[in-house]
Length: 195
Image (cartoon, rainbow, N blue to C red; front, side, top):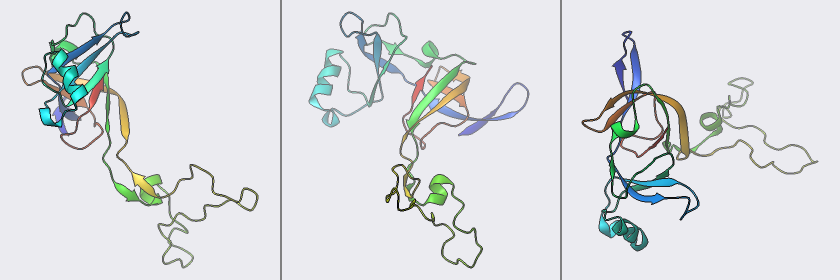
């Protein structure tokens, strides 16, 4: 993340994302596939790290293997092999959704994972129960722990969508887009931007 100054002189937190160039790998139509969509490929991938079916899919489009392959709807009249630049799709002032994988935080307790307050909250002489979850059972009638109970476990590393982020600036020379706010994932991770 970084920050920029807007027209009123306010310092606005933002994220700079490299967008494309993306290549059109396949165009799906209502006639052949039952729906209209465009498959876009981004990044570069070595030939030896590409499965044979995927390599054949790229070879059919006369393209080298790409790192990411995503389908989008809403594009009209695009040909296979065409390149999409950032200024072809995005404009300043519009709002987008960003999809990514959140940072993995490993196995965490209930205080960090679910914002529990801890048992007793440092009172009643409980020296070793500050970050414990407390009792989780009901009584003898269910005689079990209900599914979905908030307990300790692995946190993060999930698909997250952040909606309605404003596009502050489009730098077409370097295929960069400046988005207001934060996006999911660590630095240099791959995200999907949807309109």
